[in-house]
Length: 551
Image (cartoon, rainbow, N blue to C red; front, side, top):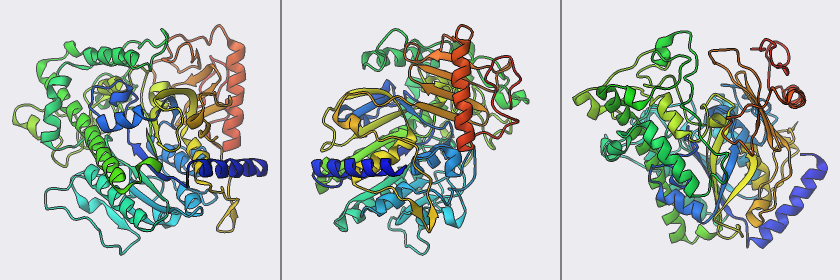
């Protein structure tokens, strides 16, 4: 932050903390690969009553922007910076030394700090959770996924800490264990008689899709209806709950299966639309219904955990002054075709489970995904998926709940926001000061804006450009306009321009009729990419359609 910005945020923070009767406890809950409309309060058929109750007493944001993939979003969320600035441009890397994390900033304001779950922002010792401001950690720091059934993949930090929770042999399930440690760390924080910050970063429902058979079985009849029927049902509910507030919210046809050089990776559908459910044979439909049922069960386990957390907060008297922020790290995961994969990702292996093998799905160690057609359902009403900068890839559900701090609850906030906005928001509500240095080195100024004003008012946030880049997919949104460029299309990807307020599902490409706007927004994206070091392709990204893409 610039010096004047630091002073303003510090002043506002003091005002907010005093008006909210003390510093709030803070719980950030991050889903992994959750689709935009999976939660009941966003139109989904998956029962999520605990989260829905938080939404009903809080705020729901319609356009929370992420960074299209697990680790760049996490880096941005934790630091208040764009992913490249934070040290993770696309995929892999470590948090940069010239950044400050939420934990480091809040610890400086007197908070106890705890992290649970998936880290995925660096394996180097200097990038570990306990090296980056967290007092205590339970989860995994190595890689993007881990077997949910095997506790050997998960660790307690700092090194030498005796795990507080024990599971009976054969009873371990990581999603539930993460909830257990969140509850344990909240107890530890409350025992210290000072505010606490818990970052609960679930690995559900990221593949490997795994859940107890008794949890997934009850979803089978729902998902035997197929993605076409359920997509129409979801959109009907999206309208009923007021998320879709005008006729521009109209989902398009089934999304494209991205192009693969080896077609078997995409289950033979490379570059084609996802198939109609009724076009598949009964055995394939049953296998796919099982996959989606397992995914739904993973989401339900997270919601069950939220019910336990809320219950404990109420019993301890902390509920009213605990700020809960819940979101997902990116859009639904299509990897890599409509039937999903089995075994090693991108090996081209898919198993058609039949007979007794159906009942065992999701209960063993083999990796399994649910595929692009179910991901298209999960992203209703948007196009495309994780990896892409179209709305289906970069728009997350975002819920804020804080009884003592939110004045105007139970409403939709339609301003475009970004995960990097959590840093200035939490600085403001906690009374923290964003640092100028860390370990003797200058810290980069935070990029986001505080969202705290939305807790008190329905006034719009200031207009700004929100830019994203992920592995050659680009977008910039400014005001009513969004410029976006895809990848892995059957034909050369070109800039697309949308009036995103009138056309939030990106159906009516206006690039040909507004070339000057394409040029202006493209130039602004180029300037952002150069300033933040977000793109290292062969030269600047093309602003004009018809030029060969830089990637």
